[in-house]
Length: 168
Image 1 (cartoon, one colour):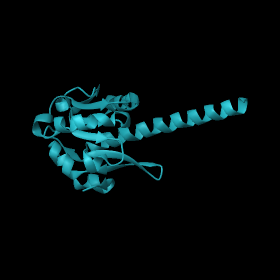
Image 2 (tube, rainbow, N blue to C red; image 1 turned 45 degrees about the vertical axis):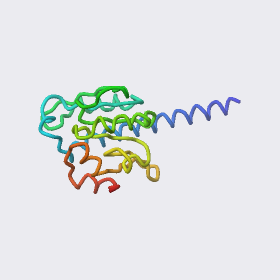
Image 3 (cartoon, one colour; image 1 turned 30 degrees about the vertical axis):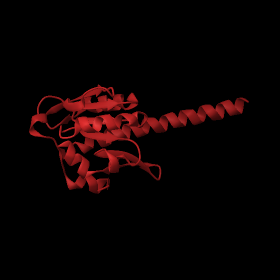
Image 4 (cartoon, rainbow, N blue to C red; image 1 turned 90 degrees about the vertical axis):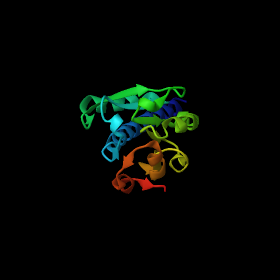
């Protein structure tokens, strides 16, 4: 019995550590995406706002980046967002896998508003989002939809898709 409890505890500890590492990489990816995306002129002043809808375990990682980095001359601000919120003032909206059902509601709200919609479930870049995190062989990667990013009202360097996977 004791060995089973220890084995389960070790598994949970390793799973938690792996999740934390994934969140760190997702946050770093998200910051690096800003180097390859140009937002509309109206969004190039004030704070650069990243919204997170869903599991907020990435928020501390994003706040760590925000405390040290900027996007151009804009300070980074992190907000937790509910599915009922209006994301129009955001620059990036990250919808975590546990809130995938909220993506449909956000798609129409971000279209043409200069908000990059980032998701975390296989197939969503093809269907709805501009950028989607995926796992490939146990490694975190991302997909890019130029079509959806264009509909969101941002300009994207072709290098972004070269570093990830283009879906269109």
